[in-house]
Length: 192
Image (cartoon, rainbow, N blue to C red):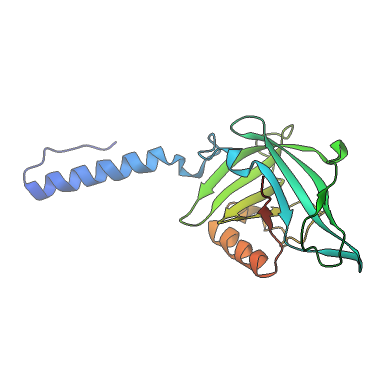
């Protein structure tokens, strides 16, 4: 049990106020718990094209496209399609193909974090128990979204899954996002 004694000097009073402010700030941040995310998945919403270009022939190339649709504050659906170009280098205007419902994943962001330059969402299958590991992580940095899927099947070049005790490590998320950006393994928002 903590006992607060009356402040007998201006310095003691200021120290008490500082300690109360720190305690309130720590209580308000959730301490890393799985409370409702602070960031809205609306930040992820839209169509995102992969930076990489898949050359099929000298007159046909494609980029993967990921569509993120916000269902609720913490719920989103992710589907995949392709952006097809009539050249061999993914330049100019491409044609967006249909997004197959077979590729739809409904996910819930149970945890989020942000730094000065990143907004991070950890997504879970909607039917997974609350204590299950995340399916993946979606990181926004500037105009880029860099997903990292923790499952055994990776659809896009992604860093290796982190050890379970480091899923929520911001330093690892930052480092892996920077590595993905250098490898051009992220997505950019498609113009409307």
